Image (cartoon, rainbow, N blue to C red; front, side, top):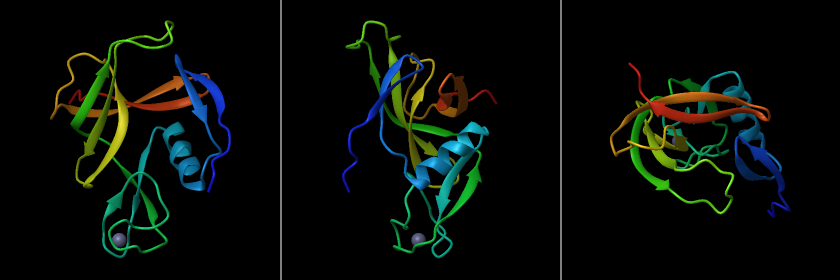
Length: 143
Ligand SMILES: [Zn+2]
């Protein structure tokens, strides 16, 4: 299915291309707006999966449900960018794959602050209110 042309929004200080939102993505972000992290869960095989999708990547069952998770985890891998094409962007920025605790799945996100990130760093969700809505970023775990 073609996504069509994106709309461009200034989110935080990032220029973001936005496509039509899938029902799975819409629900995920509605929960982020309520300061909750929810992950798809397969009732048949008991696995969590992210990104959000309609069928289980493990057993191909449909009808996945949503479960709220604490969202904390550890940095599995990351990349830090020090230069941006847009001179107005705040740099550096670190993006990471976070291994979520207890649910055996991963979530791609931005880690703030960008400096001091390393593989294995314990992190937790950070809900950032912007003019366009709530963003889900991660920060070093505080407890
Ligand atoms: Zn399954």
